[in-house]
Image (cartoon, rainbow, N blue to C red; front, side, top):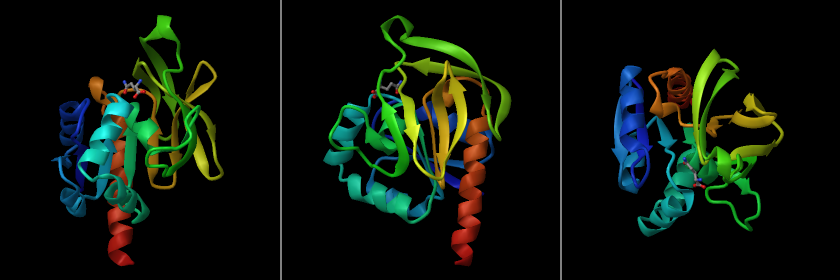
Length: 197
Ligand code: GLN
């Protein structure tokens, strides 16, 4: 069984734990960098990216998280987590983790649309998926090798770059656990191939 961590510094942590467990995988709330060693995949939850970044620095997570990604183990960034994962954040000099080959923009759906739901087609995941957006970022552009998985209003809201998965919305806030299932599949595949290498 795959063991999936949820970075537990801030944000929608327990909801992701529930979604992982509903899919029959084991969930671990990650509070310390040492816990990363036992994981097959990691979810960076939604919340507030600047707050989460401060806590990442305070608890010494920056390099361990980058190493985790570079070791080939999958990371799924949702909403603020997507901002943390991105290679570039529009309007900022430096990214956070800088691992995924995308450019993101924060709070990009406008004030009047602080939160909304939309029906999405997510490639390889669902033909119809009710997605919850809360002060959501969007993916402005994708680099080579990054596949667009979903769009809303002409904006990219989900993508995959190798073992990195990211979405603008909050998959943990509904009872539709299919995108989490897809991510667990990525973690299981990576676990099998890393064991054989
Ligand atoms: N607007 C938040 C940020 O920039 C993200 C919002 C969310 O995760 N729901 O970090």
